[in-house]
Image (tube, rainbow, N blue to C red; front, top):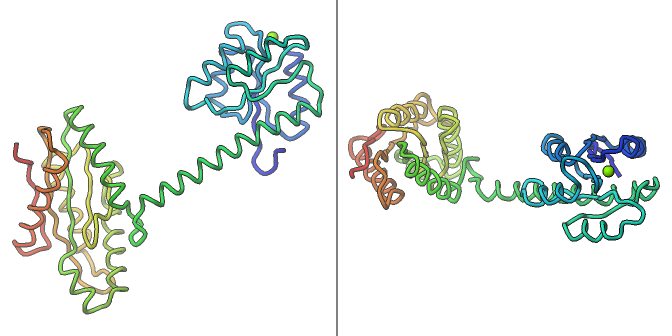
Length: 306
Ligand SMILES: [Mg+2]
């Protein structure tokens, strides 16, 4: 039964009489009803309205019910949509074929009100449960990719995106940069101000950096007081500008009442090779080390040697 959010049912039948009969019954029960006059229109309406249930006639012009369900089942985006076939009284063969093709259920025409509502409700519940399951899975996935101290992405997320972005850069031959950011003298913060303050400093530094990165950049906590920024479509010039922007954003004013700075090492991939990912990270780490040695609160960015 539809309760809070309205549940949409798509009725695909070339008979206006059947459509309007079904529409009245379903709307009385609180469903939102959209109609299609043939299978091809049904496919378009599924994409447009994301219905919870499809009531599908067998015999229709343009694309019949069987061809329509085959198309729906072959597309991962629509394969899970429960399809309830509308079949003629005597067509047992149709029912068998519909179920073989993956139909959720069937109704004899003209459907009786109680049976129509019971079968549509059961099908809608399947969709409701699937959507809830997907939402929870996405939520868990999101949690598994989040660093809870800073709210940034965690290392697992960074590693996966690093692989994907390096692969993309290699395939499409566009530049790609990484920036490794380390909070200067962070051990001193923990030792003198305590770990709680240290945690708040990391969260504060994260917010400063998150505010200045571009939407396509992927910023995360790499570990400890180290952060990694993945910068697609970014050449040396862009990486230098971005690194300096990050450094300045952190140094601009005290974090948790403390003067906090970061050092940044960056590397830029312009000619993709075999070990891009490892080489990028090693180079960024070496440049970070150089930035530390040169006095901290600075950036060292260079193109990956090829
Ligand atoms: Mg028909």
